[in-house]
Length: 474
Image 1 (cartoon, rainbow, N blue to C red):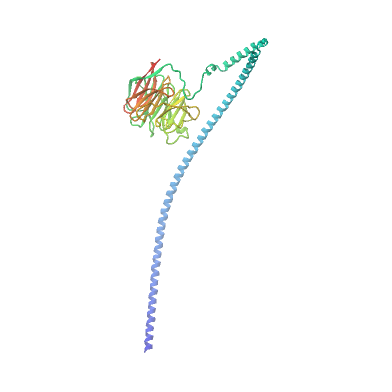
Image 2: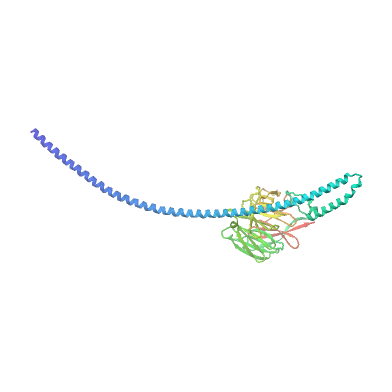
């Protein structure tokens, strides 16, 4: 019985074990079916996500490619412009070197010719000296007196040749070259009148005057910006304030600050920020211009003009820039010539006038006024103007001019006060100081039929030009 019962239990155990295995197999089959289903679904999801991000990557790649191409195009254009500027610079440099070499060769030929000529003169002098010595050494031996006619003939011919080749020789013997001072012949003393002779009101919209210049025939040219600062202007008036001509000039998006100086009796050199230079003819109101950056490859991108000066002797135009020691020199046809580099003592030329071949430079920001040279490419410092004794230490030279006797007039200005100071020819002395009760900005000298007058233009609204008499005492 025990055995039978054990067999039955074993049979049930085996049957249960079989059913358990069957359930385990069904479970595994169900799990595999679920896994396969999830695997398939996951692969579909992965494919969808992959495709989505591939599309996003493709779009981003196209956008990046377009951006890179645009930057490459811009850089290529900029590189081409820089190469073109460098080529222009090389051409300008080669032309300048050729000109210098040509001038050097010509000077060497002239020096060689002069050297040969002086050697010849020296030999003739030595011959004359030997003949004179032999006569003097003869003491009472009058046998050598027969040489005197030959000696006189040689001396006479030598003096004739010298006078023929060097007619200015008698005056050259008294000349001393000294770059530390000017040489003027003055027979009179000029003083600024205590009170102004008259004033001229400049009507709207010409309110912001930046420069003023006068011609020999009495015309006064005034330049500046209109009241809305959207354009610049040129007006021509006579000494009585009557309007002769007026012209408004569009300057685009740049600051319309315009400066002027007479180059000849009828032509005025004009410059305007940022890089415009031109010639204005007072006879027919014509105006021609060009951009400095178009002809000078080295013109800095952000530089703007602060002043203009003219050298009537050489018919040159000098253009100064903000916080720069480089002065750009042009001829009377607006052709670029070279750069004149000012002394390191000068920070920023605010106004320049050429007096007796020497530029007088107002360094308003450095609060000093200088006398310099302009021979060659490097300007040497000749001297510094004596600063007048004024209350406070905030005065700087804003504008400068000179009269026909060589006296120099400087407008010394602070934020609230203005003084007209008369200096001697080299600025080493202060002769007269006049306090102005107005906010002045420009000073110049006008020549009239009777006498010269000192003109002072105010800044702001309304613009007034004050005329002071220059009193001359013999």
